[in-house]
Image (tube, rainbow, N blue to C red; front, side, top):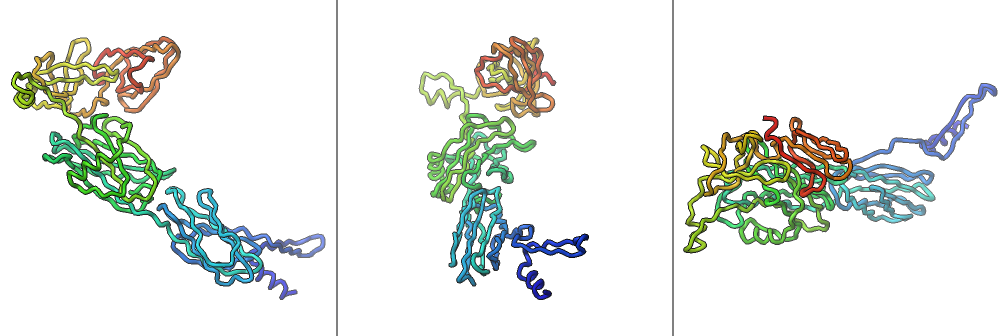
Length: 455
C-alpha cells in the first residue's frame, strides 16, 4: 500500500487529496479525485519561451502581460512530444477568444491587441489522450511605427510671442502623459510662416504615440508669466492629417499639408487653455500631423483715398487712438474709442470708466483707429490676459416660462456652480465670470449692473 500511495501523490500531485480522522471508527479516511488544486494563475512577461507538460486531466492556465503597445501578438507553439495525443491553446484578450482548436502540429496563434489600457492575455492550455509536451513563445505586440509632427504656423505680426503647444490622448481607461512644448513665434516673410516643426517617432500605444481610435486632444496653453500669445477663438484653429506622404519644412510642402489637412471643430475651452479633439484614424499610414494654426486675421483700418486702393491701405498713417471692446459675459458688444496711453498697445487689457453708474470696467484694445476718442484709459491691467478672467455684476431674469437652472463660474474659486430659478424669478447682483449659455438665448435676460465686482 505504501507504494500505491506514493504513486498516487506523484502522479496526481496537482489534484485534490482529502483526508480526515473519524473519531467513531478511530480511522484516518483519505480520498483522491481528479479535481485540480486551486493555484494562483502565473502572469509572465511577453517575449519569453516556456515549455509545458499538459496533463490530459486538467487545463493549465497562465496570463501574459504584453504591455501598452498595440498590434498583433504572435503566440508560437511547437509540438515536442504529442503523438498519439493532441492539445489545444485558447487565448482570451479583452473578451475576444481565439483558439488553435484540437491539434497535433506546431503553428502560430495571432491575437489582435488593439487596446492600450488592456495589457493581459489569458491562456488556457489543454492536453488530450496523453500527457503532451508543448513549447510556447509569446511575442510582444508588433506595433506600427508612427512619425508624429507638431507644426505651428503663425503671423509675422506676432513674432517674439510665446505659447505652449501640447497634445494628449486617451484610449479607454488609459490616459497618456501630456506632451508639452514651449514655442516662440517666428518672424519672416515666408508664407506659410512656420514657428514649430517638431518630430517624434515611436510605436503606437507608447506614451507619446496614439493608438488607432484613440481620442486626441490638440491643446494651446498660455502658461504665465512667460507666455503672451493670445489665442483668438474661433479665428485661431487646430488641424490634423494622417497620411503616407512626408511633408517637409518647406513653403510648398507646408502649404500642401494645410490644404490636405482637416479642420478640428469645435475649438473648446477658455483662456488660458484651448483645445480641439479628434479620433485617430485607422489604417497603417505612418505620418501623423498635428497643426496649430495661429494665422489669425489682423484688423486694419483703411484711410480714404481718391488716388487708389493701395494708397488707402499703405499711405495711411497708423491711428493714434484705440478701439476698445468691453469684457462681459452677456454677449453684448460694447466698444469705445480711447486716446493714447503710455505703454498701451493692441491686445492689452485696460481699465476704462465709460460712465459713473457702471464703475471701472475692463476693456481689451482690439485695434488702432483715427476716430475721435469717447473715453479714457485709467490703467493697464497686466494681470489679465483673457476676458474670461473678468468678473462683472449682473441681474439675471428667467424668461423661459418655467423653472430652470443656470451654470456659471464663481469669481473667487473659478469653479462652476448652479443657480436655480423659479418661474419668472430674477436674481440680482450676481457676480460671475461667465455663463454656460449658448447665445443668442431665449431663457434668460442678462443686465450688466456693475463692472469688475471683485476690484
